[in-house]
Length: 165
Image (cartoon, rainbow, N blue to C red):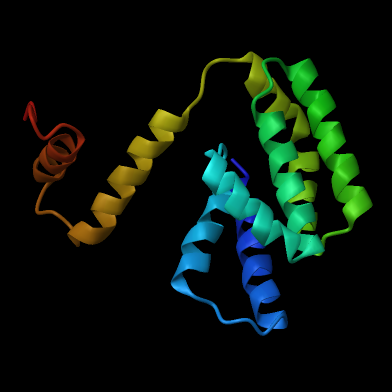
């Protein structure tokens, strides 16, 4: 849903904190810092994350916002989600991190619809994925001679084991 802005901010802050401290960026640090994006950590991963969060207060705040957001996503009902989302909004307002401003605004604008998704078990994600696959196929195909060939290619890409042409 809105994981991307949160993770993007953490990645940017990670690199900025390394550059500001003028410490060398080495492969171990970069691979360890990918743990910031994980939702659940092993004990050794958690220790590595704690070390990275020690170096930057803003990074620590962004990580805390990410964890609050995951709590919101784990809510079982729309009423619980509404409470957790308001906690996340309050935390965003208190911390004043500019990179989260757009994410907060989007969540605020779409809040009734997002909360409705917690009560309704249905989603149009599969249909949207199929439409995206067909549009991508159409874009890379540079046109087919007739509709029958285009339909056959769509069915083949949808189920290669049994195309049903």
